[in-house]
Length: 208
Image (cartoon, rainbow, N blue to C red; front, side, top):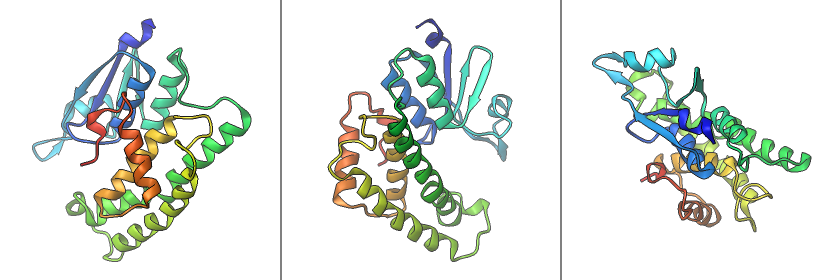
């Protein structure tokens, strides 16, 4: 595919949401230049990063004249241009199942992981959250992980059609939870191990 040679992905030197996009790129067999960029220079945001994204965050995908942000939207975009659109289902029922599980993670898990990062994790020094935010956020993630266990019982992947971007997304948030000491069920641990064994799994995504 000619367009794939024009792709440039900006990511941090450490694990971030950009690794979701990197994994999708490898799954889709696209060619992409990856540039690792520091979020801060001195006491402020990296000016180079601000030039490509005024919010000062990664991932940013450059495709021709376009600068694309938000990891999940980028993955869907890449899926649509790849000529190998396998990361998003196509039938009505499978699309609903896919969207339902994606939105569950986006509403019931990831926001509380972000609160946890700000209230009790590496970003704590930049924020001033009430003391009870961290334990409550962790409890909410723990409760939600029980539903995720139900998603994967007797299934190799989260979607009935096989491996999709759902699995890329959930690997990231479930291992993010482990960074905060959350212990998952045996079903989830087996699921994570299965994903790590994929040939296209990027070593930068490994959570430890």
